[in-house]
Image (cartoon, rainbow, N blue to C red; front, top):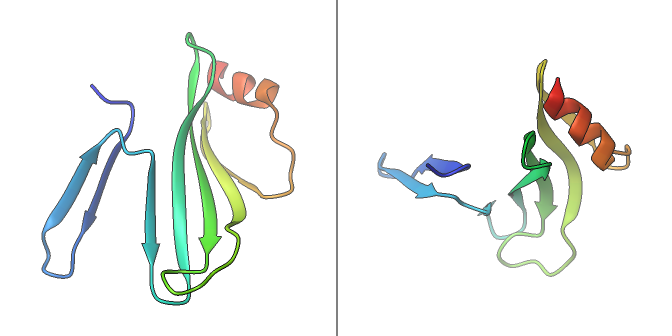
Length: 97
């Protein structure tokens, strides 16, 4: 079974799914949001992580800006805003609960 699974609805109400997606980018012409899935921690205690970026959309040209990271902990999902330090030790600690 895949570690990550993605789904979204299109404008006609049909669900679109993907097994093991590495990222999703939803965008208009001038603005968008990208989410990148990754696995942190170690093999014994993997941690799901999702980085959230602001983008310039389809028509813009500019850098992606990291807004923050969502990761799994023993207490449930946690959001770490960009600029706050999230070390590998913190991921490992979150995974081991």
